[in-house]
Length: 190
Image (cartoon, rainbow, N blue to C red; front, top):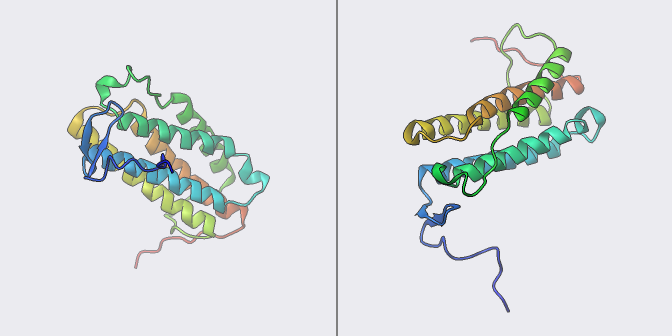
């Protein structure tokens, strides 16, 4: 019986390989960061499974596919030393991706009631989980900035992409409630 390709045993001592083959600790800041990017991508996959199978949501499937692919692009860059990105032809996050999110933000925000107060995360299950994903995205953004501060090598457009993705998720959570006729709850300081 042949060994499965799923496990290699090469990480059994707490190290992993970068794209270049360089071995580093699984506790390294770089590994932690691209693990967080992978986790965010998984959260988005689960979030999407909560959306109703109707046109008001399915019309955004292509954008969500592009967002998830862009997160893989970001992870691939983070899994490689910046001086080797060109050698391995690792994909960049495209400015068009950011513009696509901005376009949908503008479109959806035009449908939503204007915000005059902060809103409490919640509402439908889909909206509530979209807020959870938004906060996970902000955590990845903070870690990416910290990584850049320590290494001076962060992928082009990555901070903008994560910042805009968080904005997009905020508006999308509101959109989920809007489509479901779920009233938003306003923050009232105690």
